[in-house]
Image (cartoon, rainbow, N blue to C red):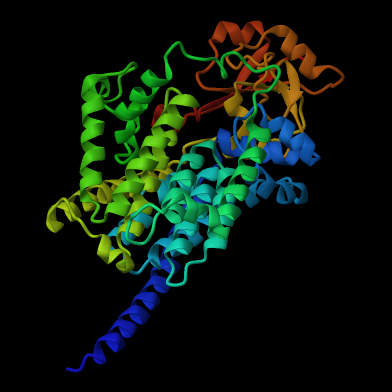
Amino acid sequence: MTTSSFPLRSIRARAHGATAAVWITALYSVLIGAATWRHELWYDEMQAWLIARDTHSLPGLFQALRYEGHPALWYLVLFIPSHLTWSPWPIKAINYLFAVTEGWLILSSQRVRWSFRLLAIFSFFIFYYFGTVARSYMLATLLLTAAVRCLLAERPRRKWAIVFLALAINTHILAIPIVVAIAVWGFCLTESGRWKSVSDLLRDAEFQIAVLALLASLAVAYLAVRPPPDPDPEVWKSENHSLVYNTFLSESRSWGGFIPAVPGYLPAAIRAWLYPEELGWFSSLFSLAVLVLIFLSLKSAQARMFFAGATTLELIALAATVRDPYMRHLSFLFVILLLALIIDAQRRLSTDRSAWFPQAAASAVVLSILAIQAAGGIYASATTWIHPHSKGKEVAVWLKERGLDKNPMVLEGYFTLPVIGYLERSSAYSTACQCFASYAVWNEAFFGPRITVPDDIKRAGAGSTLPVVLIRAGKKMEAPDAQALGLVEILSYQANGGEDEGAYTVYEQEKP
């Protein structure tokens, strides 16, 4: 066999791989489309939609975002569609398009093992938590993945990478550490993994453009997330812990970024060990073991350097902002792993190979994590298909069918926002702020757990002859309390798994 046959065989293999990627992407788009169609919007999804819909100018949007703690890009993407229709379906359609594009970017990374790619696209975070649930996480992941793919292309598209990184900064605060790690890896290291000299960097026009663009993007993000003048002390309160303590706390929970186990569903004994209220030695050692195993399983020094740097920056960012991280915050650690695997697979880094683990052991570690992720994604999607997490849409449909959607309305608990979003109303009386509103504003007047009192019913029904309808999120009202308010229960929906977060009870005023 001549040596000229090897390039030809390589070209054919790549062509077959590209064809397979197209067909699998098509299948993926159908499956995630079905999951998206079935999914009912949660509180935080509807909150973003209502903010975009009910702020009528860009300055007004940025003012509203100061209470959210999130950059503006996701809300800007929603801004025009939300002003074209009151129905919230575009938020799901937009996130679906982002999810399909992300699936294609993963599947078309031909140097990554097929088993890794297949498990990754059906992972808990990529398929369900980012792909089905419509929030800024998928947009951030898509932009970060696109930037890495641009930097790793046979002809690197560094200017496009800069654009994607600058946009990613404005999707989520927790995407910023990953942007920094990508920028350092992509612009400050040579292909062999050596650091460029300061003089070389300062003479590099693309490096200069990258620094200026990322700093400008950071400035825009700061304008959106800078602290408001009147924050809600409960939401914005500062823990008594130090940054160092919070960093170790984030590290002790970092296993949740790779093993998607919702703490509330864990047995009490396991939860006490793996997810203690305060810093625990067992959870810290377990998380460290997971991080070290992943680090050692990466074959190239550049991939290991990226994973270690991005993870460290992410944990510090969690400590400084979230302070008490949950699984949704830790999810960006899985994104770091995904990007590290794409970096690790590039043949042009073959001179950088310095594997610390035997090939079989390294593959087993990665496959185990991805398999657990895929199992979690399948389980969560199947559960949502059988029994959607939130009943907000069903409550709205029920109210419309009975002609109660135009009645004066009281919302108790901010998890009632999916109801008003699906009702396509401009506002309802909220007990949390004692005002008429559509979305929650986390200012000093906000008090989410506030219980309805007679004055709330009176204010909501002022000027109307129709009976007041009260929608309560969470546990039912005690019968004597309902009677004291002159209310009678007319509907009760329980959430998936019996959680209070997605449960609703509807009451109607007996005598307006």
